[in-house]
Amino acid sequence: MTAAPDFRVARGPGATVWAPETVTADPYNAQTPSAALAEPVTPVAAFFVRDHFGIPPTDAGRWRLHVGGAVATAFSIGREELLALEHRALDVVVECAGNGRSLMRPAPPGLPWSQRAVGCARFEGVPFRLLADRAGIDPEAVEVVFTGADSGTVHGRRTPFERSLPLAVARHRDTLLATRMNGEPLTPEHGAPVRLVVPGRYAVADVKWLVGVRVVTAPFGGVFQAEEYLYTAARGTPEGPVTTLRVKSLITEPAPDEDLRRGRAVVVRGHAWSGGGVPVSRVEVRAEHQDEAGDPDHVRGWHEAVLSPPAGPYAWTGWTYRWTPQQPGPYRLLSRATDARGVAQPLQAPWNAHGYGCNPVASVEVVVV
Ligand SMILES: Nc1nc2c(c(=O)[nH]1)N[C@H]1C(S)=C(S)[C@@H](COP(=O)(O)O)O[C@H]1N2
Ligand SMILES: [Mo]
Image (cartoon, rainbow, N blue to C red; front, top):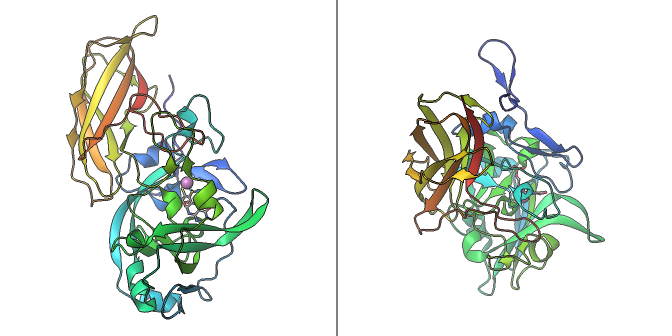
């Protein structure tokens, strides 16, 4: 048995160079390598990248953000002026709505992400609310549209990458115009010089390379709002836009196919998160022995994992469970998170036509010798 591929490249003593694992080269899409997901804070260089149109050229010196639409005073702001405003720091799980799509059957169209289009990073940024207050939002306003510098053709129409938020979400103190990620200025892949970060929502909300903000008095009908990122033809889930992150867990150790010893304790470890700032209240772990016929041994039930306090309301929660395998042979380890609303991960991938919100219990296959 071989260990999971490790995408760390060691360069000199103590130095670890991370690189995401490319899914498509042009536009560049890459998932987080498994080894990097074990870290409590995902390194920027390993962090998954999702681009619809490719990374636009960015010149931080000439960058300006235009704020207009249904406001009393339209204005624009440059980077230096934005950097001088009050910043907040938040640890945030960033997860693509299509994360885990490759587990769904039948396979929906879209990028075939395994469960690694996710990461947790510390973002520093200016609450959008500060700029909203400066502009003076019209009383008839309902949404705020955020525009990226990237554009392309979708369904035969030329469009920038644009997404809207309900006014109350846009004005929430935790909705940030982020300038820094893990203590460093944003990199081009992750939206430099400024991106939106909407904690607790699927990351399609987090418009990168932000250049425009427009307050609108009717719901926005842009392609990425009204035609894409909708739960459609969903089995077991209400249809509608992709918004709040669904409760989910990841197993980061042991690695898939790892050889374990009968009678020797092993620490099963991972992260769990939910959306909307709702905390994870429990994670349960189950070890299913797979007999010759591949039938799971259902004798052993679910066991409580130990949770460690997350780095904030939108960060993931680390968990561990000490397991001592009793039988030799193949096992499947499962983890199931439940959030404070009592919502738990389903056993099966919840299918929908575009493969969004795929949050079944996490599983990893290991062998006990
Ligand atoms: N301007 C712009 N912003 C964007 C996108 C994009 O294609 N263009 N993709 C979105 C999607 S679908 C995701 S999952 C996140 C990914 O953020 P990351 O690449 O920093 O991980 O960016 C979002 N913001
Ligand atoms: Mo995404």
